[in-house]
Image (cartoon, rainbow, N blue to C red):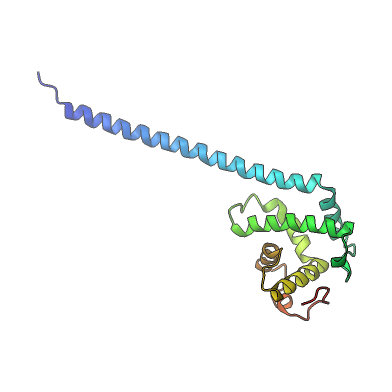
Length: 174
């Protein structure tokens, strides 16, 4: 009796293909879960900077309670307010970079309130307006460009008002 090996090898090939597809599927699921874990770790690091950094908390409280902080001499000194605000704006700019990239759409949502409160604040807009026009005059990008871009995209910042050189009082030489 002669055995037809072609059927056997066809079956082995089909089984091999199914096993490979299953292995690929399992690998993809594990990779997806690992990516989610990495995103969550990144967000926990950012949240930790909010919670653990007294300067950032102090600056956010000043924004929330509308405490005056942006005065003509703000850029001339290195007081606590300037240090606190710089840390807050750097952190928020980093968040805006992530938000603008749209890679972390859902993960960024817990921070949208803070971005909204910050960017709708009149003093913040005044500060960003001065930095924006000063940088523009120097032909460089503003240090908080991503934050400004995010605010304009979300309509937290009025583009027409922001582009005008007459909207706020100049505290920087431009």
